[in-house]
Image (cartoon, rainbow, N blue to C red; front, side, top):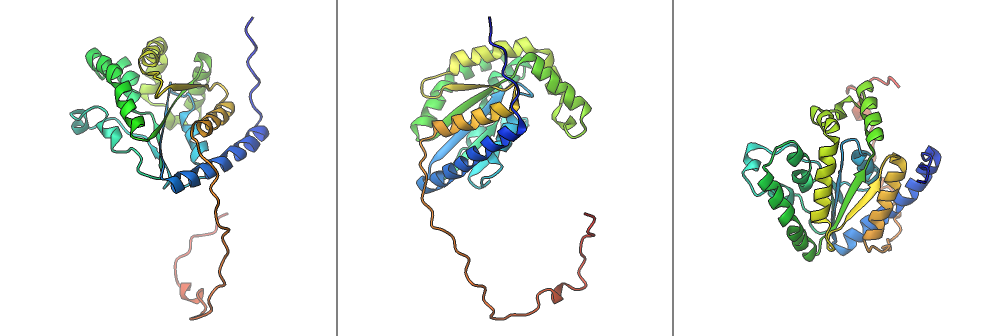
Length: 265
């Protein structure tokens, strides 16, 4: 008999644990800067699996100059004529950067394949070449972390219906999303083909169950921290200097006559 699903995590517990992990992400950030490390974290999963919320939890307390999020739109006519992975590689990290891909080159294994935006031959060629390309990426010294958020059929439907009725989230529901809802099993087969071909020793997939968004976010961040061999970097304590009074004047007087925003709140 299967174990009953765990109860959804309470907000108070989630926020307490998230704060601990976000502190560690700040330590990771300092280590990446100090060692000039290069890291790629890519997020894949079905629509409404929780990728955006998880990425937001990761980046909420860190510098966007170190943690850079890349979410590419559909390729332009020019980009369609390039090598497939070319438009992704131009966003790869330089020294001291972590690049987070909100969907990645694995679009070819998922939406492009299922929706017929690439040919079966292009899909097959991608699956054949992808492990080799990723081997070169890892061999070049880049830490490559591949994360798949696995949401269940019923939970995906619940989230889609919530988006339909919420004006703050309706923008998240595109015609492509609703079509992916219809083609659940086609996406399942595409996922399985992708895992079989690209779950390599040098760049394995890490799967996080995401029916409970809060647990998924914590498990995801914890896994990322485990996969990167960072150490805490000692920082000199910052001391505020004494303000200079040289050239002192009433700097508020100069603002008289300027247009201030009405204080509505």
